[in-house]
Length: 160
Image 1: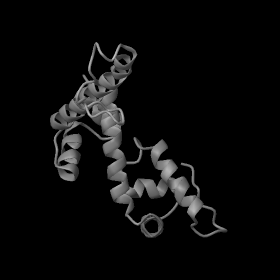
Image 2: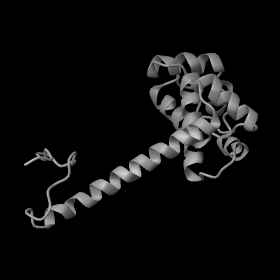
Image 3: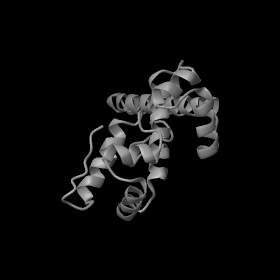
């Protein structure tokens, strides 16, 4: 296990930045704040104190948020992934741990999260398609076609 701890110096901001980088690179292996502190070479108490001083929130909150983001990315990369596969790819033991993590920390379930992510992706795709087609309307003769209501272009009110 690599350590960013240099015994000759005190815990500094660069080391905290490296601690965040360590979390991002090792999110699957880091299952707790204690694991995270060990990865960066500090005791849990010292790491938590210094991390909170710099970032204004405790490392447990950051770890939860990063795990949640990892879960979302895994789901978005494979819409047909099972809860078990998402759990393993996110660094959780099994689907029971995934359900418990989502329910306790974010008051949602796996299926609900997956449906929400799908719906948001579909809405974003539809919105981008609509915006991409709008410039074509301005290439046509303005007398032939009126701009649509709710167009995203500045100055377009949708009425003439």
